[in-house]
Image (cartoon, rainbow, N blue to C red; front, side, top):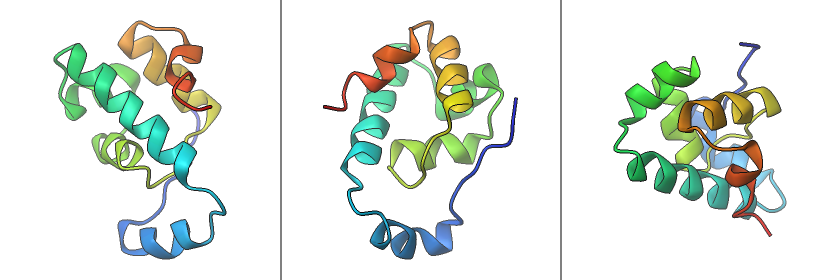
Amino acid sequence: MGTVYWVDPRHVESYLAGVSNPEPLLLFGAGLRKLRLKRNLSQERLAELAGLHRNFIGMVERGECNVSLLAIIALARALDVKPSRLLAVIR
């Protein structure tokens, strides 16, 4: 898996202040959480399946970071859905 970029939790507020429209991040995170819970997976288990750090999953679900294409693909594979399914919540 490639490098996963994330925002230090101590700087989330200032990061989101610099994002002109954080709504897609929040929508993506909520959709990810819904799919994860539907499959009865903990954040830690989803992280293991996707090859990502467990803290990263929580940050994504809270809309605190911009997710890379590689992370979206890894999450989709771990959830057994197409990547487009994860993005479908964003209009």
